Amino acid sequence: MFTAVGNYSPMLLTPEQCWQIAAVFASSAVDMRVPPPHRAAFARKADWFRMRARIGAKKDAAPVKAPHSEQPIPASRTETTLDELLSVGWTMPMPRSTVAERLERAREQRRSAGPVPLVSH
Image 1 (cartoon, one colour):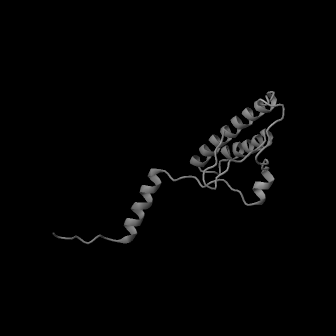
Image 2: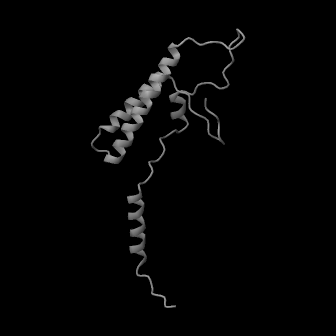
Image 3: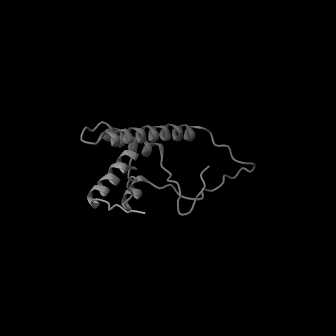
């Protein structure tokens, strides 16, 4: 299961919500106005949320076995809905830059800084 690290706690979404999120990512993955690296990232996210939806649906369909006692263990936290996430300003994390992009930024900074004085030893 998941363990909380620091202030991080995993989001609990229903399979239907995962399907909805996957559909949004899939539509962004085929949008030609989106840059190719972002389309690829959106396609990966769509696949990931589809997988989560399938796994969640299978878990919901499987019979739940109670531990040694007949009383089920109460849930430690409630499920967070997609509407609740959006209402508090939840957004997707910013994509990470590639090595090539970071190198190009460093070269641009070097060019804008001007010539480097030579130092004799």
